[in-house]
Image (cartoon, rainbow, N blue to C red; front, top):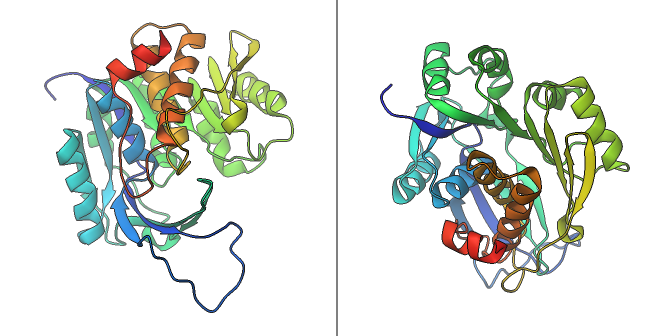
Length: 298
């Protein structure tokens, strides 16, 4: 492959159907009238990380399986519109999709359609090796078939990151991702003791840096064995949707890492980008640009 990729994003392509609801949890009723509209748009975790990276000026390539269906067309269009290279492999089961119920305070409840993946899904090894070898960094989502790709990725020697999302620190599915990556992101939402889980990730795996995001409480950063608290950033507008905030944090953190910033600065970038993402309506796919990120970080 000619050219150099800053970041290869692996997996996590799909569409979300956004349903604004009056409150969460949603009380049972026979029906609800959704006056603000129900919309389906491209953008799941891999798409949002790729979008964030590309908007910050990094050469980004996204690899995943997509169906030959209207949902897949939406994902392809999103990448075309934002100039993100996409290698879309055929997925007979169809493009991944989810329904997000979004409350007035921006919180969400996501319902994932797990029928859009198969246990034997794989990325062709030759394609995976070629793209990884061209990359400075690979960000691995925890979707299928990324778990099967981890041994090949480690063989290439390219630095890896992953996002464990709301891992409880116990589910064994997440452990291979946590232990293979050099940079590990996760949410503190399901953790009773974030520091304990973060240190266990670093001790049992390869991680140089572990970040646990905690929403309005900021984030925890474990780097060089030292745990520090990353302050939250005031969003630049009303909070309308928290969907994609963790992906935005990861993208901006990786931008900092790839431009030589120290971990504390990377985490500051992440907090700024995550706060910005919370002001973007769920029906849109948008990310903070490099100039605005650097201005807010100054």
